[in-house]
Length: 277
Ligand SMILES: C[S@@+](CC[C@H](N)C(=O)[O-])C[C@H]1O[C@@H](n2cnc3c(N)ncnc32)[C@H](O)[C@@H]1O
Image (cartoon, rainbow, N blue to C red; front, side):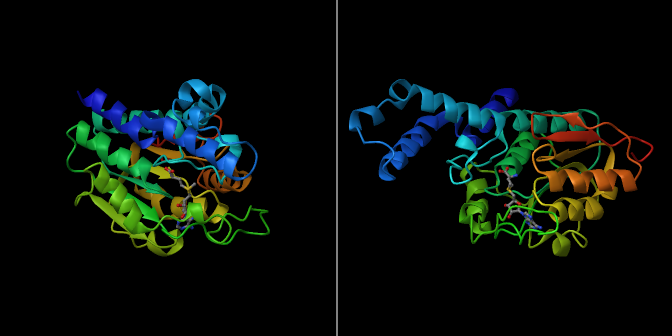
């Protein structure tokens, strides 16, 4: 039952249970922008009538990319990390629970909250009641990009869909009956909230802030709290050069030689070893 609950939760958070609604929405949207002419009969059974679009949306969800790699097409899922990264997250949590690796779980950069809702749900399914889930975000979108690092402008002015307020994220937790005292919110820029966050230790540190500082600030503040045997997961290491640069710099400075393991085309992780690396 636990495995079935986890899989159903994952499907629901990825909106795989109702991809048809997204397909119908994307279809209606392309009609509204004049790319296509609306035919009502097509929208009734999009899985059959808009088969190619359905497959594109399903594949984008599997690999954790937006449809057409277009940030305006974020769709309806509660997380943008995709199925493969959700599976990786489950295996990290299961491993630390099975091996009694102490510590809470955190994601820095949560958007609609789906990955952290999943963390809380997996802990519940595994009857693991002592660990907290920390939910860290500005809840106002990304900060200004660094020009020196040629970061794309992903700020709320340009992409309001990336700025999800804390009330919405809490409502998303509540929708899955997973909003309780074991979920803690850290609202604000990572550089302000993380250094003084009352976190004792971590078993899973998941970073998804995209930018250089949004990756390096959490590593500087939290890496020493990660227990031996715990996991560090970097969502966009292979996709975003400045995210990669921050991780490489941190690992070099700290002498971390444990190889990075790929999750999918974008995401990597490593497991903290006993010699601190
Ligand atoms: C790519 S989204 C995260 C996606 C999320 N992990 C998911 O499961 O869908 C990036 C998030 O990081 C947050 N963020 C980026 N840099 C930040 C910073 N320096 N401080 C606080 N939040 C930040 C943004 O507000 C946004 O919600």
